[in-house]
Image 1 (cartoon, rainbow, N blue to C red):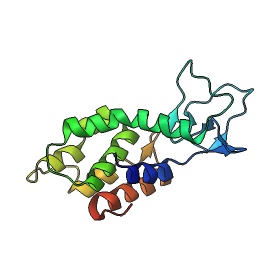
Image 2 (cartoon, rainbow, N blue to C red):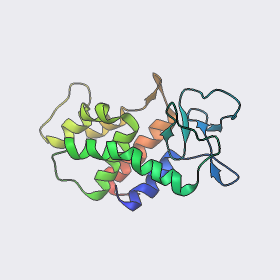
Image 3 (cartoon, rainbow, N blue to C red):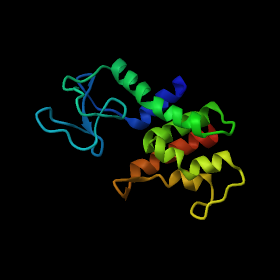
Length: 165
C-alpha cells in the first residue's frame, strides 16, 4: 500500500488517543476501554488493530507503534489482493482493494464477488448487478447494516473508481 494509501486508511480506521498516546478502545463505540475492566469483543488499538490474547497495551502506544501495527496488519490484506487480483489495476485501485480486504478479511475478499467482477469483465452475478453494488454490499457489522461501513465503502469506492484519496 502506498504511503498516501496508509494516510488515507488511517483516516478511515480512526483511533483513540488519551494524553497523546493511542489507547485500547471499543471498536463499536470508539470509546476508550477502562484499564481495570475486561476487554470487550472488538477491543482495538491504533488504527484498527484488534487486540489479540496475550498482547498488552495497558500503557498505550506511540504513533510510530500504531503505524507499525497497521503496516503489519495490512500485510495479509496486501497478499490477498496480490494473490487474487489478476487484472491490471492502478495504485489507487490497489490501495482501495487493500482497505476492503483489510476490513472484510482475506478469505472474505478472496471469495468475494468483487474479485470476480474485477478479474472478469464478462462476469455477471445474479445477486449484484455490477462491481459497485458487490463492493457496497459489505456494509454489515454483527449482522446489522452499519452507517460507518456504508461510509467506508463509499470512500473506498471513490478511491477505486476516481482515485480520490
